[in-house]
Amino acid sequence: MGQDSSDTTTLLDVQHLCVDYEAENGTVHAVNDVSFKLGRGEILGLAGESGSGKSTLAYAVARLLRPPAVITQGQALYYGLPSSERADSAGRRRRPATSDSTFGGNAPLDVLHASASQLQKLRWSEIAVVFQSAMNALNPVMTIKDQIIDVLHTHRPGMDRQALRERVGELLQLVGISPDRQYSYPHELSGGMRQRAIIAIALALNPELVILDEPTTALDVVVQREILTEILRLRTQLNFAVIFITHDLSLLLEVADQIAIMYAGRIVETGTRGDIYRHPRHPYSYGLLNAFPSLVGPKRKMYSIPGSPPDLRHVPSGCAFRTRCPMVFDACPKYIPPLVSHKDEQQPQAETQEEERSKVACHLYDKAYREQAPTIEEIEQGYALVSEKRGRRA
Ligand SMILES: Nc1ncnc2c1ncn2[C@@H]1O[C@H](COP(=O)(O)OP(=O)(O)OP(=O)(O)O)[C@@H](O)[C@H]1O
Image (cartoon, rainbow, N blue to C red; front, top):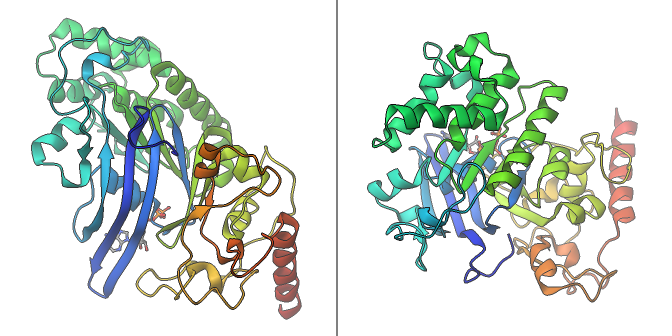
């Protein structure tokens, strides 16, 4: 995130994306005016409670949404590289050759308005998605090898048997599955191995962007860590970008370069992981950060966020978080706070790029309402007070 769209390092530039679900009992505004940039090879973590619109946002970008979902606004500019310049599975840049007409060059592709044939070229080859509980979605009657070959065969029909066999071997080695396991059926593999197999399939065509939707949630903590380490290693080796979706912000503090926090379909804060763990600005980010025990970052008292997320058919006016916010004040219902750079009072000389990466959507940071931005201690006190009141009522 955070690069100029003319910058060659930008891979994806999403602007003003809105997605609704036209449900029978009303329109669900699942994604509202979301904008962000993702750099080549960067890991963007999307965090937020269940129902905040994370998956809808990511699937919109991959154009995988089905009715009743409707993309009502926005663009998602994809700046792919010509295939000749992409890294191969050993992480080497290929020699420049003839340029690809769909991706690369100067003109980006607006994924939200791409044709069926452009989308076919885009999926798997450019953008691969590992769905929530994907490891249970492996075909139970096909071996791992055949499932990888299936993807390769569909998208690279020209590959001969020898090339297919070599690529399967390469991919399995890449994700740490021993060659003899390629003949296994999914039920013969552990959860961690199945997840590795899914990652091998996602990487089969050397994509530039991998979307991982809660990739480790179903795994135990030790395996979760192994898979995360693996993803980081692969990213370093192959330089693909990642959109990593999770409700567990503390996980993102370990893997993401950039973090975007979603609430009720909007991004309410973005920042580098260092920025978010050292100083979450939005009271919601603070609550989310302290709702999970974390191995990294400063030790803070844990408070749960009071209440539950709103029904996205009837979101509160103004700031949607105000009904749960311990810092709520009279400006909050007036209008939706825009997502804007906040000036770091401790680092007035902060670089422009850093400033652009760190944004918050909260009236507390609007000089029209408050001279001074709230300190982290004030936000903590706010939560302590709410928690004390709840304790007294119980
Ligand atoms: N097919 C659908 N029809 C109607 N509403 C839907 C549909 N799919 C999702 N929604 C609603 O859209 C909103 C956003 O859902 P989404 O799955 O994107 O959130 P999320 O943050 O990814 O949640 P989770 O972590 O639980 O997957 C939720 O209110 C959800 O109920």
